[in-house]
Length: 303
View 1 (cartoon, one colour):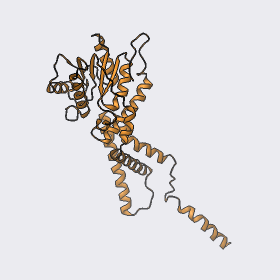
View 2 (cartoon, rainbow, N blue to C red; view 1 turned 30 degrees about the vertical axis):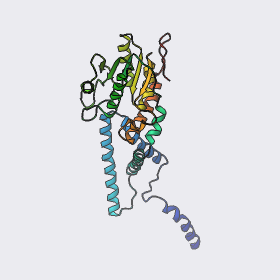
View 3 (cartoon, rainbow, N blue to C red; view 1 turned 180 degrees about the vertical axis):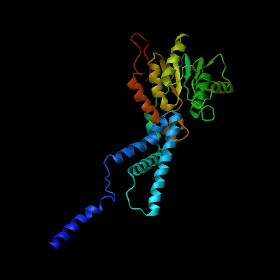
View 4 (cartoon, one colour; view 1 turned 90 degrees about the vertical axis):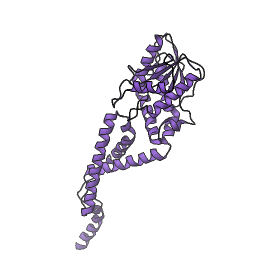
């Protein structure tokens, strides 16, 4: 009987060694949740308004630092008890976020996501060149994308592609800066004549509202055919939503397949922009923003 009990103890011992010291069992859903949360930190958080980005980002950094200090304290004191489940989850999600962040920074992931969004530049002339708004930098100056769009729109106007140049500026800035004033200052610096250059900011909040505002402005003047200027990743969604208003749209993306990497300041920002556009396409499609105009209206010409 003693030998049999000893054999049973030898069989049970490996099983007991595999159990956590506190009896805590890891659930199957914990790792997938940590992976999704880590991806969201890198890809979804930048799509939120600036107010939410800063507060959620700061909150997560504080939580990760707290989890790291708890882990270091346990290691330093040589404690063998299992870590709290939330500490493990935060650590895994932070590790995933760091890995994805490094991949987006050093690999051309943004290029892979942005290239399918491109449209070829259309030839021909139009009634007006419409340059979409891209906002200001944290210092109140035109952002990198805004500079690219306005410079390219000015170039098309000087080439005689349209007699009228329309520059859009955001109606509201999250940091309190005046987008219209900054755009007007840049237009004056470029020597764009006021009689051929119009700045529109009222009602300019999203790509959808830009399309509605521009449609009303052009229809009041009997104009319909536009050259639409925006950055490469944005051109598909913008062309579809402008065409849905009944305007005849000639895409004029700032970048093409060879220069798409220059659409943003870094690979990470290009990835953010591409993810934003894919999510925007899905949201606009679900909301019906790409639906064609009412029967009897003009037929859009988006390639």
